[in-house]
Amino acid sequence: MKRRTFLKGVFSIAAALGMASPVESPAAPDPIDAFSAGSVADVLSALFGDSQVIPSDAVRIEAPLQTTKGKAVSYKVSCDLNGVEMIAIVTANNRHPLNTYVSLFDADGYYSTRIKMEQSSMVTAYIKTGGGLYSASTHIKVSYGGYGMHDG
Amino acid sequence: MPKQTKLRLRKHGTRTEVIVLVKHPMETGSRQDNETGQPVAADYIEKMTFELNDVVVAEARMGPGVAEDPLTGITLGKARPGDRITVSWVDNRGEGGGAEATVR
Image (cartoon, rainbow over all chains, first blue to last red; front, side, top):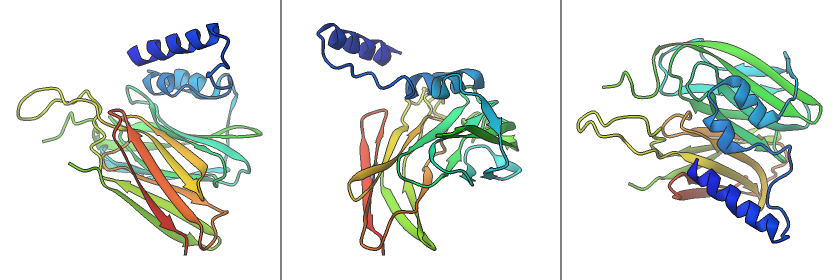
């Protein structure tokens, strides 16, 4: 949080000096808030403001139903939606639910990664398009958590 | 230890899948060393940028919740043979890396 306080200070000084505000548009997410958030609701408000989430069959997830180790769980998101601006992956039962997100400026609506899971959880993919915020979820059962607690 | 970046392109019809593998510990900062019991400092990639002919087409943000040696993929519908794809990343320690490839 120190860095954040510092940045805020820098921004307010810049604003006081009448310089163009370096703060991005209100729609842009704050990655520090989003990754430090302790609940799914806080992640969503940091990333998407108060956008309504619409569960959709157009969002497809390719992930295992269960895994022995939560250290690295393959997770691929694709969709039939046009104009995809952002894809976020959120593990509800992690202390910090947001795993990762990608902003897409001129790329297809696809994102693949490997996430850490502390325990069995719903893992949700959120896709933001120009038209709305869509989601799909999958439950992944984990026998061993992914933050080094059960290793070695 | 150098944090190597490998970039691979895979064609799916007109689409090009960009696959990036970074040799990176992705330490959460909440783990303890098994032998010394000392806390292991956080060390994870925060941002990964994808460029197509020097224009940013995607930007991934990561937290400690991304697995060690992250394997990250996006697809580009617009990439054509001869186009240059560049990937670069930076971690919370300020270290970075990248790789480049040409679409065939």
